[in-house]
Length: 607
Image: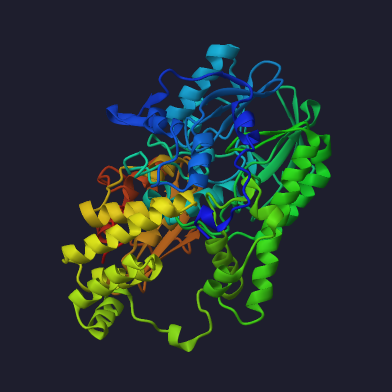
């Protein structure tokens, strides 16, 4: 399912996507490079100049085509008064002109790229002030650059779907370390670019490597049909929770006959479960919300645009595009459930399911970012969980122990490596990867095992149509050969100032090393003068429990009077000696002693 050769019905002569990706081009940054923090590079589109050539044998031709499309960069006019910055980060930033200024939709991943995009717009449309920001949903590539477009302290309304902050935090802070590490595989950002390395993620080229920020929303969109007028621009919203993000929304600009589809309908099959990690998305609900968008907005729109890829122009084209996107997610959902109820497990369904020809041959339904294979497994997981019902799979050995057992059963390490290479030579790359992964986990010091597995992963990557599959394979191969690709990207610290007090305490609770804290017990009362709020935290049985208010006037080992910023300092390990307090300040040291430090560079393809 990852190989374009599986489908000879694709129309390679159809150049509509290329025409639409070029349409409305005004200018780009020359060269399209953006400086990052500390003298680094946040973005460099010139790394992808090789995509102007013919497809090499080391890249799937369909992915090469998609990568050529997302490499197009600069400022584009979508329709009167609506512009997009594309190809200068993983996502698009849209700028909508109002009576006195400009509304910014989805300010990219990084402060540096968002600022550069706004500067590019202003160079060609005038120095209009930013009068509002709209976040379409709760993923970092749609809010991380906000501090690059909103001056510090500016009173600018920030509009988002209800639940935005909760989900932005849960995805990027609570599980942020693991997700950032897996994101290195997902985006391939640290891979060398070129025909043998990173070509794109399919959704965009890759993510920028700049400074992440977050300003909390000031206006919540809570229901479909809700309207706002911002700087003279009328907007009608559609809430779409549980689709591409837990908090997401589409919206129309009826006076401009334009429709923003957020990330709910882009020019590929999207993820129902992401390889970087996230909640499983609701394919059934996703399809129904696209259907609702058709009914509410599509026939009154002349252009539909999203937060990735290029727009679709023409009412009938929009309806066709959305109808096929609607049917794509519904088909995957319904057929997975049909086969699930016939007793098939996720891996079996993923092998047997086949899209209808009309969807299989639609370029915008190809699996460049999500795939039929892993999306089907996500649907299975959503309904039945990780366990497939086979008791032999209920209590399987973890990777290192399983690897050792398999290697012994096969006849030793050398025999296992030989069998893996034999399977690869016979073209059975998938089984070769499984065998050789067992060898690596059984003997992580073996250079031969790592080299053999790296060769197989590289071949799998070079054949993959899906951009993130390719990146996972190739990053895995690189790390087996050269060691862990270390990341300096840290979503959590850049977002910390936007966290609520409860969320900050949650991040501390997640870091408690349970066994270390089994025998600890203490109570801390916290009085926040800047929020007029009081909390009590209790460490008990290895759990840090936080409750609003004080249980009683006494009973605390330590009582602190402080600000939210000082709490963030404590969480980051800053000295606490100058804090206003009563009781034993040493309790903070006892708390710090049981807090673990997440490792952003843990091993993935080896133990």
